[in-house]
Length: 442
Image 1: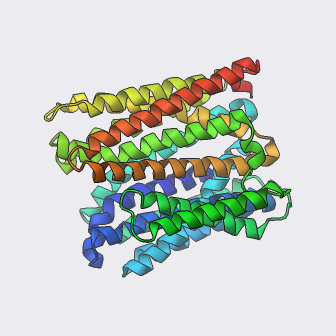
Image 2: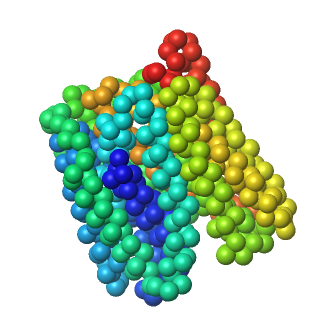
Image 3: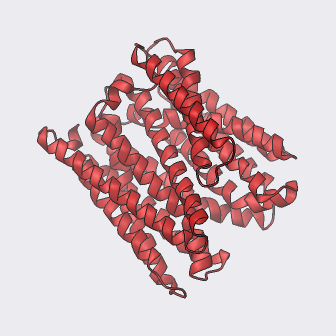
């Protein structure tokens, strides 16, 4: 379990530390801010494009046979990132790192489901969520501390010892589960990568469209149409259309997308709100946001255990309502608000998100047969990334429409996403009660 959790920790740390280091990278590589953002976007783009095909490959070959090579690739790509001396080299290394991270995330929940017994799965999901939240909280702090004495290259080298420990543990303890041996449709895998990759690329250009934006969306729509036509007739579909026809499963995935859209929008908008609207300096921003991931990390193991005995949709409904309340409270703060007035609603946001996350992931995994675990795991990871990308795109649009109040508008959008997720969770609870199947046992 530690090897699996370390893989998520590395992917989360890598993202949060890289975001913090972007100004330093731009200065040392001699490029502009708009150019260096590609270091982040190419990582996300490759992850979104390849996660479902790699999850399907893990289902075919066995998760261990995909997880271990992915760890080696993440290790090699991290060294490559650290050694990069130009923007193109760094972006190429980040693409390789994104490919490895997609494989690791696609296997993550399926491996947790294999490691824990059914009655203890909520606890396993909670531990996994706690480690991810702790990494999210510690990433900016660790990056800031390292950048005071080291160059940005060392932010990638720090992955090396984590990778080596994870490889040693995984090689010895990871369960040797056989794959299903089903054929992998290479054509569908390519169409899947194009459909999701072009959709994300289009989302990133919504706020500031250029001459290629319309073409990107046309190609994305064409890829989706061809993918749907091919997968509809396939016995070994990469995109689980049959599972998405199940209302409880598709609703749970939708809730995941909406919740991470709220989180993604908030995490992009909050630094601007705290710095520009509330007048806090950059050094204080990280400390003011920290109660969110800290409370999420503290609560995740408990919500995971509770979901073994209680309704996961009810926990999600309450959690996302608390998240919406916390975000609304922050958006209403006046300039010069004291630190405690910011940190309390941040803690409320973390409490709400912590209540939602583990139960939602548990429900997604229990909504499918055991032999479809790899597909559910990949779709869950994809839902997170799509939600975060959608949230960030809406933030960019808010700043385009109103540069002065963009951060406040973006938080209102995040509130809307959280409330929509809470309502979807309420509908999920209604479906569970109507079917007379308690969600904790589904």
